[in-house]
Image (tube, rainbow, N blue to C red; front, side, top):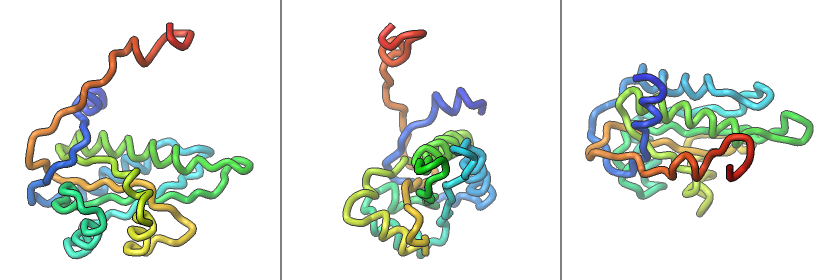
Length: 174
């Protein structure tokens, strides 16, 4: 699958996954796509915890209470280092977002599905609780969790606004 086909086919999947295992080789390939993403000042502030242990997956899923987490065959937890890398500026959020987008496309290209979980981590100390469970150092931040697997139900990409409502040449608004 080429990159444009992966972009067109990618969607956020919040449903249940089948019980089909994801080989570690596929998980490594997905995370290598994240590692290959650009990074501000090449600081490479994003790291990854790949969870595929069934007992640990159940403990992690219990924190989220979402069907996609309860049935995920693996979860990729994206951890950032918020240290400044250019004066007092940190690019850890941008670095993480670039890595996640690469992984979303790799997940799609390999025939799996996922959803980018971010906002939910900001409530009830969920990011900190995930970090504690996975041994993440306190000076790092859990920013994104990607539960993944083979979708049990078909999914679809949501409709996007047309090009001319979101993009223009040479001047905002055309």
